Image 1: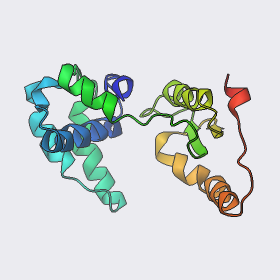
Image 2 (image 1 turned 60 degrees about the vertical axis):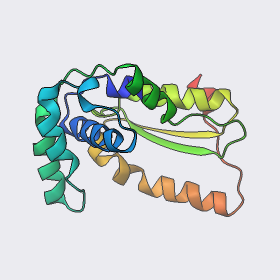
Image 3 (image 1 turned 90 degrees about the vertical axis):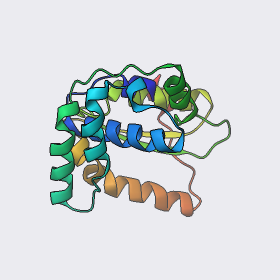
Image 4 (image 1 turned 90 degrees about the horizontal axis):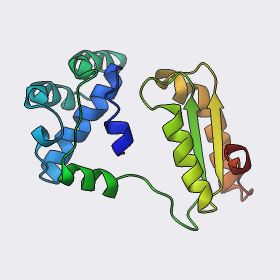
Length: 170
């Protein structure tokens, strides 16, 4: 989580994810927004965090509202660093198999972060299906991987052993 948040992404969707995180965590955990982003980002975060994704128009509104956060410096203080560490997804020994789909043209979630996460899962002997999608960005990854994800889920319910790409990820 820390690496993702601190990347100061250039895509407006990165700003939307940042705004939702800062806005909600400041309310849930009492973390001051100005101890992770400059105080000048506050109004943008307030506006973008209240946008919901229920349609293409809503996505466009969110991207426009979050656009000023592109490249915004993110410097979490100790409290934010603790929250980011505690709320990061992590491998669980003996946990369930995992399906990960990552486009190599993703401007929001850098492919190396997803591969590193997959490798951490593999180190705990978690079976990982890692679908690398050449030329696919964040905005189209879900649609491009939906059929394979649905087939993977159906196979789990059918009792089929999960495929494991860990050897190829090392």
